[in-house]
Image (spheres, rainbow, N blue to C red):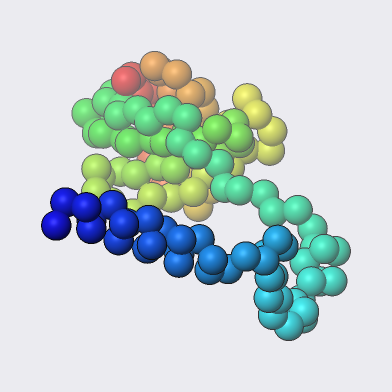
Amino acid sequence: MKYYLPLISVAALTLLSACNKSDEPEVVGGPADPMAEKLANAAPVELPPSVQASHQYRCKDNSLLFVDFMSDGKTAQLRTEKTGAPTKLTAAEAGKPFEGEGYKVEGSGKQITATLPGKSALSCKA
C-alpha cells in the first residue's frame, strides 16, 4: 500500500495539470454602459465636510450649547440639547460668524458668543 500512494498522487497531478491550458485568459464583457458618456461629462462630486471639532459650551445664563465645527471652516451644527436635532449654520467665508434660522455663533475655539432666537448675545465657554 505504501508504494501505491505516491503513484496515485503523481497520476492525479498529471491529470490536473492538463486542465485549462489556454495562454490567454478569456475576458467576457457585458453590454456597454448606457450612462458612460453622462458620467464622463458630469461635474466632480464634492464630499460633505467632516467634523473637525466638537465642543460643549456653558453659557452665562447657565444653558448648554453643543456645537460641531466642520472641516470646511464655513459650516457648523448647533444643538441646544445633547440629543437634539442639529441646526445647520453657515458662514459667508472661513473666520466669519456662523448664521442660520435665527441662530448666530461667533468664534470656534474655547469661547464663543452665541445668539439664539428671542435672546440676546451670550458669552459661552467650553
